[in-house]
Amino acid sequence: MNVVNRGFLGRRDPERVELPPGQYLTRDFPVLQAGPTPSVPLDQWRFTVRAETGAEWAWTWPQLLALPRERPTVDIHCVTRWSKLATTWEGVSLDTLFAEVETVADYALVRSHGGYTTNLPLADLLDGQAWIAFGYDGEELAPAHGGPARLLVPHLYFWKSAKWVSGIDLHHDDEPGFWESLGYHEYGDPWREQRYTDD
Amino acid sequence: MTEPAVRVRWLVGTVHSVRSETATARSIVLDVPGWPGHLAGQHVDLRLTAPDGYQAVRSYSLAAPADGQRVELTVQLIEDGEVSPYLVDVVLPTEQVELRGPVGGWFSWDPDRPGPVLLVAGGSGIVPLMAMVRARAAAASTAPFTLVYSVRGPAQRYYAEELDRVDGLDLRMVHTREAGPNGRPPGRIGPADLDVALGARVYVCGPTGFVDAAIALLLAAGHDAADIRSERFGGQP
Image (tube, rainbow over all chains, first blue to last red; front, top):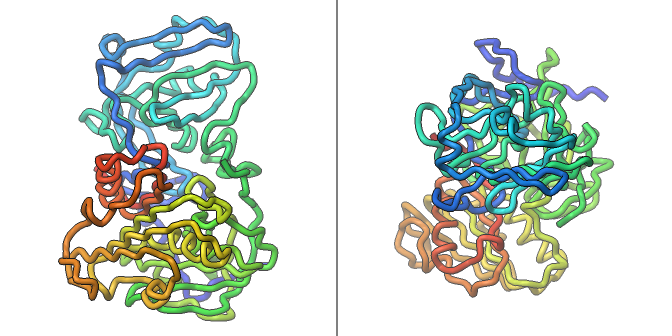
């Protein structure tokens, strides 16, 4: 059945920017999270990668900041339908961190302070596609947006870019994270509009 | 944690009735054949199609618990919005819109939970919390419920008459600008408004600044972060 809403005209984007299907442009930076903002003291901050073998690699805050930095400018797409274009970040590429890590695992489960998790294939974190970001728009990353540091993996819906990131567990099998257990898509490609489990 | 309950098929809903809540907000009751049911607190994706085929989708909180194929939303007009002006000012009974859902499952309350609940609403953040209040009544639950509801003044209250009549609900209106009938001086939400026994499951919904302020007060009062679930709208630079 075709529903037509007479009297609904819609507001076409005058700039005709190409967005993923079902997204609209925002200039705001909406904040979405499931609970309180955790506070993470920098002297206790660690980023830990745990391989499928049990081996661990960990970085303290000063060790992270001592690594080579990148300044990606990327578009971000939230599953709640806003997209924000040309956002500027500062952080360390996951390629830099994973240069030390020995693994043959295919999947990553990302962990955050506060208990949040999200899953994605390890391949999506490598090859210049993902960063541990601690700067946004020329400033320190604000706690509301995931500071001191968050994952940035902008080619997937933004719930995959875990705020307050604390580490990554590597697994042979894909294990659903927080939203992925609540009906959201395992992979979450905005250009294929993979919002919910069976999309 | 609840099982995933997302349905991906678009369903056609027919507007059964509309009701003005305030000068800029309207409740819309729809009949949606095939609706799979939902938990209080979940939302729905709503799709409009213009005569030339252009479509826009937005998410709205469900304002009432599942009642067969009947679904209720409350929509706040956003002045420069794309979809809300149509829903608040244009759509009428017998017209159709497309829906899919329910969506979400974290910010939800199950009437089988017997424990105390604190609901904290800022402005139109009342909508999913009203679904919880109504679900409690519909299930004849005796879970202790406190609702702290912050609005600018009495004219901004949604569900005003109904809320005054809910049995066993500890309703605490917070009027930030204009005093209401309860004698509380106008002002922002404060520790006294949120004073309940620790251990309650807490749901906070509203604009980002309101949610952050309420959560800060709750944590300062000793509530466990793990007991607090939030849903927010709007941005922060």
